[in-house]
Amino acid sequence: AAKRSGSGGYAVFESHMNDGVGEQIELQQALREALQAGQLKLHYQPKVDSRSGCVCGIEALLRWTHPTRGPISPAVFIPIAERFGLIIAIGNWVIDEACRQMALWSELGLRMRVSINVSAYQLRQPDMVDRVQQALYRHGVDADQLVCEITESVAMEDTMATQRVIEQLGDLGVKLSIDDFGTGYSSLSSLRQIGAQELKIDRSFVKDVATNADARAVVDAVVRLGHALGLRVVAEGVENRLQRETLLELGCDEFQGFYLARPMAPDALLQADLRMSEGSEALQFSPSTMM
Ligand code: C2E
Ligand code: MG
Ligand code: MG
Ligand code: MG
Image 1 (cartoon, rainbow, N blue to C red):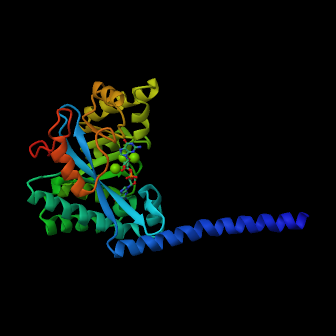
Image 2: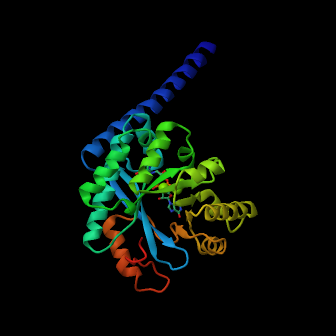
Image 3: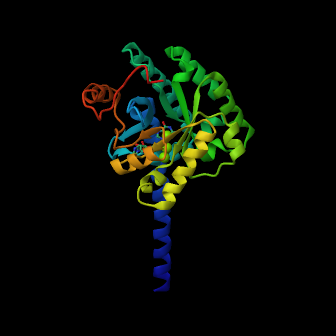
């Protein structure tokens, strides 16, 4: 009996492990193929000025539909791409695609400011800045139309390579945003040095801001800190009116979340523009307030 259970336990353990790794290898292979076949997409989620209600920018979010499993979240496949060395190719595609889309919008008279999410691995590449510069040039996009979102933990990463790339992006005129703020730990001096223009309060604090005194106190403190450093403070993951009202009261500059708009394909975004600009509580794309 002992032998049976022993070998059974081992077999279960082994097959379980194989499944995990095998699944990741399968996913990264499918992801590689999707990238090569041009099947990755960017969706765009508006960021709305808290006072005027105008769209002041949009965030590009990667979308992948697996041929048999359906849509897979970037929260799942980005870590896999990072682990298997695919993130640089994917990141380069995102940079180019976002610039291409900005150029298309420009032709329609919409000068959109677009934020892209940048992985720690990209920031350790010395040629990252060249990539960005070339994409901007190729599509005729101004550097200050592009925002790089870097998560707090990566932005505070204390390696020379990362800090150099961040600094060079800033020199190029690209805007910097510190994403998921509140989940990492920043020293106040590095926060000041990094040269960002924007701070995005993590969704976990936004979620409870109207119902939990601690979450509210954190948001309050982050808004004050951001403003003291001259940064625009954005709340991500705003899902209801109560959250929006509380965040406005606390002085947040911009809102982003399902309550305002979901991430959308580029054509849907333009239709949303037309439909929404009729109502009063509506999203408005105003070229003058876009930047
Ligand atoms: P993030 O940059 O913090 O993006 C915000 C995430 O919150 C997005 O999830 C967005 O769809 C979601 N979201 C927006 N509003 C709401 C809301 O009101 N409620 C809720 N529950 N969620 C909301 P998504 O698209 O699944 O992306 C997840 C993460 O994957 C992103 O977090 C980002 O870290 C990463 N990611 C996405 N696209 C890229 C990319 O092109 N490159 C890299 N390196 N990472 C990416
Ligand atoms: Mg982001
Ligand atoms: Mg975020
Ligand atoms: Mg987040």
